[in-house]
Image (cartoon, rainbow, N blue to C red; front, side, top):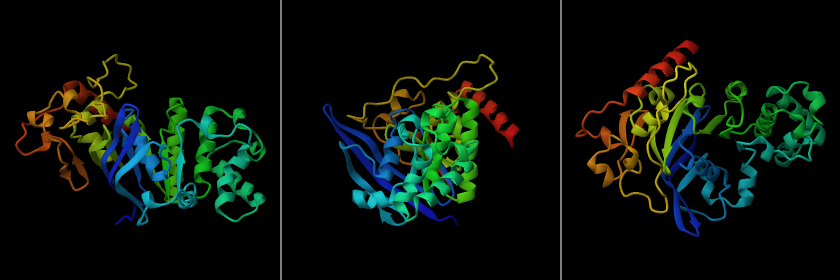
Length: 348
């Protein structure tokens, strides 16, 4: 049995704004196990980044934690002071941000930037810090790392800068690595290399990864489990195989149907109709109800509970209620799944 390293329980976070209170995170629950990769997917604004920033203790000043616990090794992160969080942040839980140029200091050599967190958390000399920074830069695949320790961020390509950001996050060998859309700004080839790199490093270090993305295709080969978020809630969670091959929530169907394929057959991408709800006044029933072509009358009146599909797979949709009519996903989505499965089997 894998060790549970992180537990998020009934997390509820709102933001005070001039327009009113935005209910950004609404009763989110999930666990993270030692050595696994959990992908959190969903459209922009679904609450993915707010959830992970709360784990890092990096919420904005107008954020209010209404309820919940984030247990890291049994201790609640939400109750820790900023001083206590500084000891955890970077050392035990680290984060790779989306845009490496905003994460790197343009006035500081990359050797110093990679070593900085190590020098702060561990009592070692600058020389030892730079030696370990060099090892990490080699590990993440920076060519001629010895010669490039004294280079500045602008002297590296986009893909190399993202590798440097990964080295900074890994320097203290954290237990949990949060990757917030780390490949969005990169081209497809570099994207694949970075994902492969994260996979390799995880195997070497046995760290746990939370991977945030809006693109299900990106995590197909790296995630052990996938949590799908919509309107501040997790609406489906399961192993990667369950989510990709047996999805149950109509929103997950839509996300999978909107994944482009590389065949160039000219077939139309599936688009989920409508827009996400306004979280200043979340709907009474299922938040996906207005966009759901399979919606039932109860969807407008009550939020669905989680229904268990298997011991590792559950989804919050009334379509799984025993009295619900049987429904099959649209044909265009099924065609896309078939192509996706073919591609995955080809890689196996």
